[in-house]
Length: 494
Ligand code: 2AM
Image (cartoon, rainbow, N blue to C red):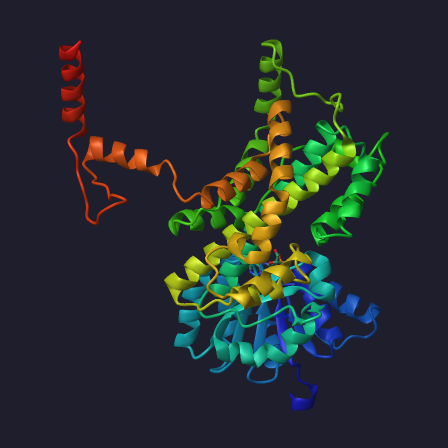
């Protein structure tokens, strides 16, 4: 094929994300070849490229023709289901690829799979990237947040394409070379964990406003829309406001009230919590959001339990505004509680990233990661600019909460935050994410914790030894013997 007629890049896997990303690449002026195992999706993509203004996109039904249609060094983005389909697709395509060509997996892949594949690819002289892609269908088409990690040479090969295709914000495109190995996938995984936390916290804010404040759907829509004009401005707050305005086409009222309260999930939140445990990083807000999804899944059990406790005299907390609740004050307090809880959740995610970066030698730049999340992705928010700046001020910041700006904001909001959590506890409305965040904050800011007692217990029953606050060394005490002796001495004295 003549070089002039060859494509700049290829994309294999034309489900929703793949089709949209391919059209985005073509629209930015990069001729693209596309391929899918099932031919009908190739046809669909070709039709869409035609409809959307004759975009420079060529469809292929044969993997060899597809690979050979791409300029060398070839770059092929793969967007198929994570796991075995990625291995199968790589095996199909790599037969026709040559040393120096690049494979870019854009799926939500487990980072160790990427590291394994990168090694296998390297044995054949192929370069490999695992690239997190966030922003859903809309993001893929109009500008996602991209988190590529792996071969630096592979990144350099697609740099011009990804910087144009990614969402654009005031300080550049939402893409950066994340780091080596599976770091791109890992960062995307933690992004998703943070997303779980954000969604949980928003749902708790909704629960408190609805069940403690008695807000109607219309008032909720107005509240979230108002919040979206301030410090909470973000994609998730914006879509939440929209959700409350949608009527149920099959009945009266709004659709949100007819949706079954059972949350689905695909696993990246669970991986985040597993990794936090592996790395000994406290991530209680993200863990609470995962647990809430598990509990939401127990619909039948919850319905039965509600009945049992109601019959035993404990109904659900008031479902209407209790007397004395000042709605305006509650809305303001919940906004503050949500914001402060969010800072804690992001602090956990960032610390998890840093711990993994140290373990793997990835040298992750936390400020730059906050920057590439400012646009395109599900957690995009004005707030991320503040996180970026906090790490720019001090890249060694041990915890986001102690950045001087965030610390001041936490202090300004903590009274409101405690009011919200206390009210929810009184009303029997669970707010696990907000509680976990508050406990994280209150634990972290205490110079002395009751861990001294736990150490004493461990030393008593397991001779695990303890350290002292006033002298160096490891100590062991015969606690039981001394305590017995003290008891008998006390008796003798009586
Ligand atoms: P399909 O259209 O041929 O099913 C999401 O499922 C995407 O992953 C689709 O493009 C799908 O292709 C692709 N996919 C799933 N399993 C695959 C496999 N084993 N090999 C190649 N593509 C696969």
